[in-house]
Image (cartoon, rainbow, N blue to C red):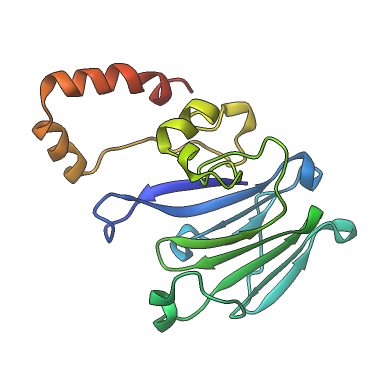
Length: 190
């Protein structure tokens, strides 16, 4: 399960989840991508599915069931005023993912049992939040998914917003140099 995080005009450049990709060996090589409404259609292996609303789609042999409807308990009560567009994926190993598609971002709910070696941007699921800081996650899994493991068709560049550019000009030069030196390994390693 991989996420694509990008700033929006509503978040002043701060990251929001724009799209997720689910796939790999676990789904027999299939890849399901679901993004914000403005990101285009829901896809399985690059082909648009669930093009009508509501609708259902099944991967071969009942491997996974995907529904697109209004059904689901919201992750964020503040979104209750908007029309619901919810993708529910029932996947192998009792994994269920709900993707709440909004105009320019998505909310997620992932339900699953703890997996061996589980780790990522949401932490390692060991019930110890103290080892799930951004720095510790980057040390364990890196800041970006390695090219050979990427489920998305392409990598997105990390462009800075005007707000971020302004913040850089306000940063103490020594501190900025130290940050670029320490973080450069994460930003340019892929």
